[in-house]
Length: 185
Image 1 (spheres, rainbow, N blue to C red):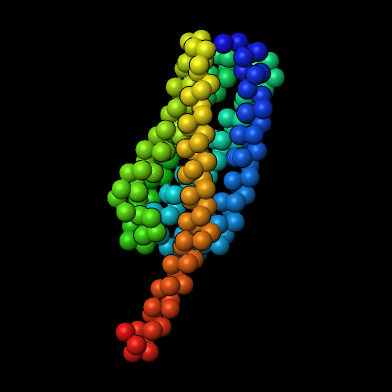
Image 2 (spheres, one colour):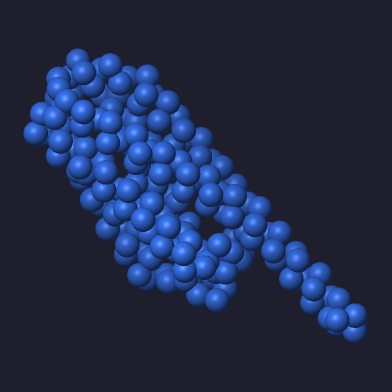
C-alpha cells in the first residue's frame, strides 16, 4: 500500500471526520439534557466518557487519513497510538466509574458485555489496521470500516440514551411516585 492507495480513501476519511464532528455535537446535547441524572450515576459517567472518546476516535481517524502525502507507516503509527490510548482510557473510566443501580437504562449484564465488545472492536481494530499498514498489507484500511461502524453505532446509542431514554424514564418514575403518593397504587 502506498500514499496513493491512502489517497483513494480520501472521500471515506472526509465523511468519517464529518460524522465524528456531527455526533460529538449530538452527544453534547444529550449530555446537557441529562446532566443532573448523569452526575448521580457513576455508570453513566463511564458511558459518557466512552462516547466522547469514540467520537474523538472517528474524528481523528478521518483527519489522520486526510493528511496529504502522508507515508503509510506514519498513518499506521497514528492509528496504533490512537486506538491504544483510547482503549486504555475507556477501560480506565469503566473501572473508575462502574455501573451501579442508578445507571439502569440499558444497564443489564448482556448489554454491558455488548458495549465492552464494541469498545474493543472500535479501539483495537484501528491498532490492527495500523500494524497492517506498517507491514504493507494492501487490505489494511478495510479493518477501519467495522471499527468506524461500531463507533457510530455506540455513539448514536449513547446519544439516544442520554437525550431520550434517561429523561423519559425519569418522567415515568416521577409519575409513578405521584400515583403512589395519591394512594392509587
